[in-house]
Amino acid sequence: MTLLVVMGLLSATALCGADSDRKVLIRDVTQIEGVRENQLVGYGLVIGLKNTGDTQQTFFTVQTLANAMQRMGVQIAPGVVIVKNVAAVFVTASLPAFARPGMKVDVTVSSVGDAKSLQGGVLLLTALRAANGEVYGEAQGPLVIGGYSEGVSGNSKSVNHLTVGRIAEGGIVERDAAVDLSRFRLVSLLLLNSDFTAARDVAETINKDFGKTIATAIDSRRIDVNVADSGLTSVPILIARVQNLSISFSSPAKVVVNERTGTIVMGGNVRLSPVSVIHGSLTIDVETQHIVLPPGPGSNGKPTDITQTNVAVGDAPAQSIQLKEGASVEELIKGLHAIGATSHDIISILQAIKAAGGLQADLEVI
Image (cartoon, rainbow, N blue to C red):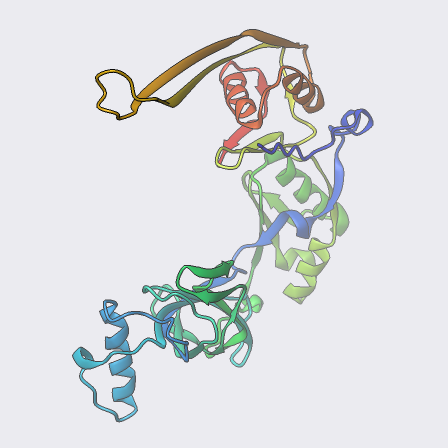
């Protein structure tokens, strides 16, 4: 059974007010240029597994183990090592803005070999590197797996993913990655969603609050705020004051559909031009039956096996709906449900309506 999810303002009262602006804080719709997270990644080993690690065919695991043991003063030949309680993994983490040495971060550990499970494993000390190749952190510790596997051979049961684990605060920042705000001459606000109207409103709101022109909308995404003209000596205080100002914000009309799951998400301010939708259904059922007849003359006492195929074709009459100018999401969904359209049918219908110029919204297929 397909699932249709329509998120938005579907009641008549809510739809009437869907076009009105709503108040939001600037901090909720913008970010500060240069203040961001950085992705870290490392390669290491998880040990202590219960015969669920990589097999001998995953040769790079044995090579990594041999290298690790060599650093500990133990010499082994990788070609003769057979272990099943070790797994090669990639370790990923996000380095937050203004991270300082000694801060702890969460890390995610993912198997890269053919290990069956990382349950009960411990990550050995692993260097975490940024895109520039520099080490910004180290990770180590016992894994927490969001699932389990019990049983043997064919009589077993697994729940959730067993080859990805997490270590809460398992990473430690080793290098200062903080941004020096004292050097900022301009604080650039970047809108999360590009919008010329929103950029203008943000600049006007800031200028009105300070009583002078210190903010300028550069384009549909960027607003520059002059630190010197603000009269504030501290950049963090300036950012805090600006971020807590509120503006009138109108969400863009957008429809997001997921063809894999049949999910459709639409905002309440989506409107349609006059459009007619015709929806028909053609079904073909093929049924094969095996009939065994008793032995007859000339069959040498053997039963006769006959295969009979029946084909039934049904072509339901086309059904149609008509939508007037400014039709809402609720009217569209009610009409499509009335003609028996499934969520996957509605996705195709929405794409056709958009192609015909009848959907006054952005259509995004994921």
